[in-house]
Length: 169
Length: 114
Image 1 (tube, each protein chain N blue to C red):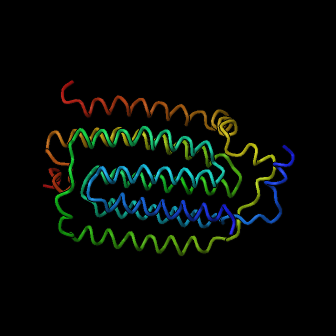
Image 2 (image 1 turned 120 degrees about the horizontal axis):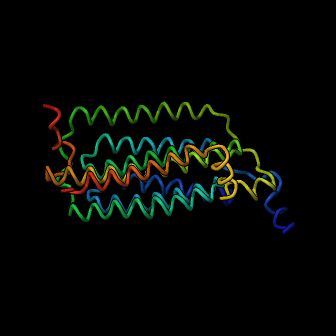
Image 3 (image 1 turned 120 degrees about the vertical axis):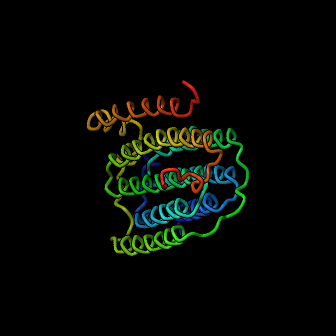
């Protein structure tokens, strides 16, 4: 047992537990809080994968901005606990079963992947892999157009959200 | 500095296989999909979609680590940006629907069905 395996196990277990709480909590507030903790534990997993920058972005954008948006909407709509689970319709039963089938197929497919630890990054790779500088170099040399397209997408989403949510323009 | 590097490069350091991360991502994706299928509250359905996007991100980062390639990190960054846009628009739609129907349960929204 080494520390990396212990950390992975703890983060993986806590991620799955929080995700289960998101799905099964009765009140939307509890779901949102469980979603925050899911994002934090996932950020821990990202650090284990040597992706520090994405882990920081995860905490800032997801656990910060997106969750505030969710909580604000829950407060705005004044949602309480859902009155009942509702009757299980055919679509819901089939959907749940299909999800279990998908999990089984994915599990079989992924278990056939070659096991073993990933290749070592090397001394130089450990110093540069996953840093903001490396990511920025890739973004601004190979992926400049998609990056600009994303900024346009965010602008459109911002304007669209105001137009859709405003009652009278 | 040199001592630190030597300590980090200890020989035969056992590491977590990438397939564990991929299996975890698959489980997380399926949990999100299960939530989308069975929940009725539109807000919780959005949260489950976020779970699925995060599972995709975890897969991107796992493969980036496996190949030592930063493009996976950039893809995850784009996914985060798209998720932010999706959350903003989706929640605006939820507010608009709640304003006109007084409910966020997806079974109450079926004007287009008839």
